[in-house]
Length: 156
Ligand code: HEC
Ligand code: HEC
Image 1 (cartoon, rainbow, N blue to C red):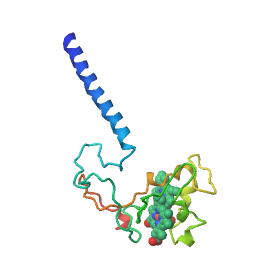
Image 2: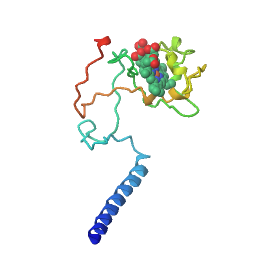
Image 3: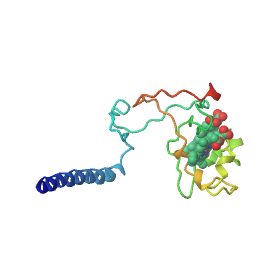
Image 4: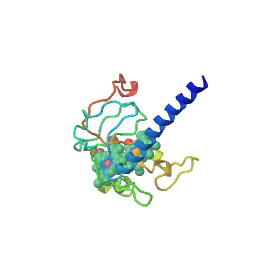
């Protein structure tokens, strides 16, 4: 029993070891290539990335419909090369209240000024600073898993 247990745990140590090395090698090589598509479920994504070139952005379109009232609107334009760092936010060049008119872009809504503690800021809240956490640009890719979602009643 004990022997079986230790054989079992050695097998696991090996599996975990392999996973860690794959992660380390993966992290090292990720730095110099395009972002590779992958899913947590291990679904084959090659249909959407046949030559492994990473994300391709779709063409710019008019504003896209929303499927539920609280949805972060989808980004209808490319965001290739748009930097968001601690010092600089490219999105705010067009979507800040000061710049939106001249850029002809929707200005960020007032919800974007509220901090986690409920304080109202005069510029975008740290909670909403990293736009791509919630807003995503579009690409012409096949769904990797099925879904039966229907738009909310208020939007049908
Ligand atoms: C060069 C100016 C510019 C930059 C930079 C820019 N956008 Fe936009 N964005 C626009 C314009 C113009 C529209 C379309 C507005 C319209 O057609 O009413 C738009 C539309 C959007 C919309 C849809 C709004 C809606 O009401 O449906 C979202 C979301 C958005 N952008 C997010 C972003 C994010 C996130 C970034 C940064 C990664 C970004 N944008 C950078 C100009 C810009
Ligand atoms: C935590 C999620 C989150 C983050 C981060 C976030 N947004 Fe939003 N955004 C939303 C949601 C949800 C909505 C729709 C409801 C609302 O207006 O709050 C929205 C709405 C918008 C709209 C449409 C406003 C309107 O009046 O219809 C624009 C434009 C926008 N966001 C741009 C941005 C930009 C630019 C950033 C980064 C500076 C950003 N958002 C960061 C969740 C987020």
